[in-house]
Length: 377
Image 1: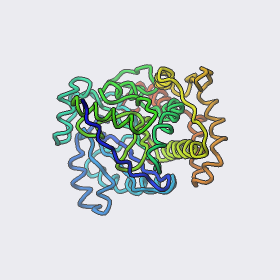
Image 2: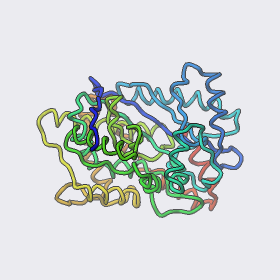
Image 3: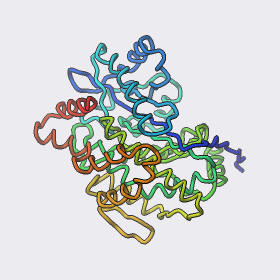
Image 4: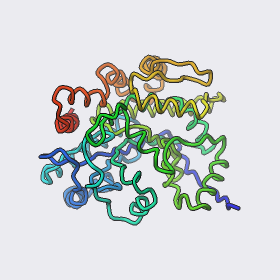
């Protein structure tokens, strides 16, 4: 019989933000992935010791993660990331590499990638084998503070109604090992193959989550809570809901739009719950279908809106959603950033821009160069 151990949730008194932005390292000559992260961390620590805590290692040596501190709003989080980005770019040139912001690389092969040293990563690959070795994927994670653990799963489950909106806007992984997959976000499809990844289960209470974790640990599925890699998950030690839906982002402007939208959505749901409203939810099978539609069709997806199975083009629904969230955005100091969601819709998402470059050039290295170039925007 599993022993249920209480999981402390260190509630955040305010709906603060934290952002984690994964970027790949690419060789400036070939455009291929570069296993040079270890050298980058050494040199970065030497030149920018005060920012060392803002740059993290990931599973593969071709990846660097930029991490903010605890921020009150989107402009502060983006300024934090911009400062770290500038510092990292001061190092990459000397190493002959560029920073690449997308969900997947268009032609890299998994067989040439090296693991970051550490027992945890080697154990993950040993367990997951081929699927684990395939994980050449990058994303953006956004934490929003929640003050009471009783709110976590009502908000998290209702937030899943907007899963396809977030994925469609951020989709940036149409190509895989030299082929166009036909998907806007192949990353979303790849990552869910890991045994503890994918969509979260629907829990009504925190106690149900504690019982689930007890089962996971008793059966050896996980050893630590952070091995639950859901697309949206609680981070109890931080007192946040962590939104991990989004593909990697290629520029700060679009990143700011995604961060602002997530912040507004979570705060809106928090306030509605606190006011006594029963938050809307959809059945897991409808959420699963929405994820697939957004991954497949991106901004052209027809998404399911509610438990009554009403459907609508995702961009039309986003237009109304942005108008509804404007008062929330004003209070969160992110009106300008939220408005940039409309720019993504108007000018096309990263997956569309990557395809356009390839159609014009028939050169996957040109796709890499175009994505790298967007970081200067």
